[in-house]
Length: 230
Image (cartoon, rainbow, N blue to C red):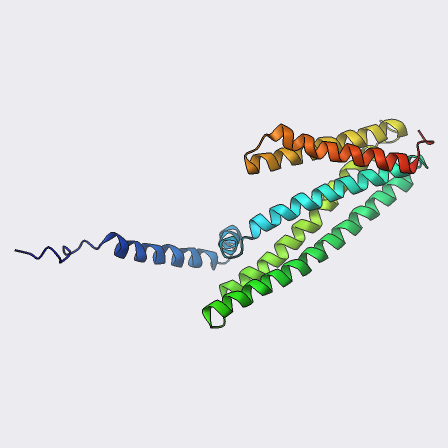
């Protein structure tokens, strides 16, 4: 009669069987991430180590909001003083590039410090140097987050300038200003909808919140610049 305290042969307990399974899944993830040319698998693996996707998502929202609103403010402020399309396009493009460079460099420096601090805390907790994939993951996080934060204001900042490219072929200067405001408001509303979907909140309310901020900013910048040119 077999002992009741002895587990049956060939039937490991749930905890015992789960450990090899987790180890096997982790080793499979590492092997997939290290395969040459498998960028997305490697990126997902690095995200598990650093949470870089969530960080980059925040940087995208911040950068896009800053870029669109800053360039719209520039357009409305300048439109009260000049109707020279070349001046507005040059100023808007220069502002977008400056935002992209400053945002990318600022994000890289911020993430460099944060990732280094996390790495030092991990080494202190483990009482041993941490190398290999963790180092690569931190490097990937710094580069990706800085690129996202640099590209977002650049792309969003160009949107308010699109109508002025079509002056005078399709728009008068006055209609270009109105179209610039409309494009920016639509973009910010969609950005708010994106945030609402992420958080599971009312998407319309999330979009309207960003529009209210944009309208308030537009009014202030328009009044500062004056409206003699319209």
